[in-house]
Image (cartoon, rainbow over the protein chains, first blue to last red):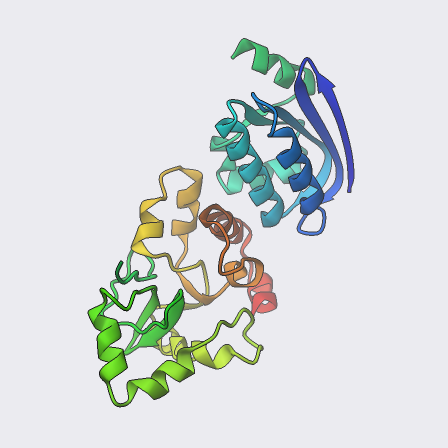
Length: 113
Length: 155
């Protein structure tokens, strides 16, 4: 899996490509832990390139979200492919995460809140 | 300090065995997951003083993470629960009342759509010290994506 990160107005954006599973989760977890040290931890995870997600990856995202919220920020998801959206909806995690269709509006949502 | 019973919210345990740390056991059709302390647990005192309990205790010691591992004997009594029908062969993890009380969010309740099992995705993917959220997500994922093929693969 490929990870690309950037920063927009102090908001950290992580773009993932490929399978997001138990093998690739540690890299994402490590990145999330690093960026959560900054307060407020405002994180956007762009899943546009992710076509598969497993329970370990979901755990990583939930842990990252909780850590970010503890640090006064949030972790928001955007650009979910249909298979990933289905998994997130079936596991009801769409109630836990704020999910946006585009990256730009996700970044803007932080300034609005 | 006291006993902590690991059961599905719909199941009521009557008795259990433990050995200091988190322990799964099954006695007379009841699946339990027990934590206890020597100081406060009457159950522990019974085990310590009972003549036959030493043998039973030894059988239940250790931690098995895969059914085929060397320590899987400790979990064999749980198969009684499967035979009786209290427990599915493959299902979600049985939670202690303490763990169950922490289920507050909607997504965490997804796991309650299926019955607890002797084994499951939770058993394969999580460690004994896994955070509750990890277990709940694994269970929710299992419930959401469950197929008979996946069940066979897990078993």
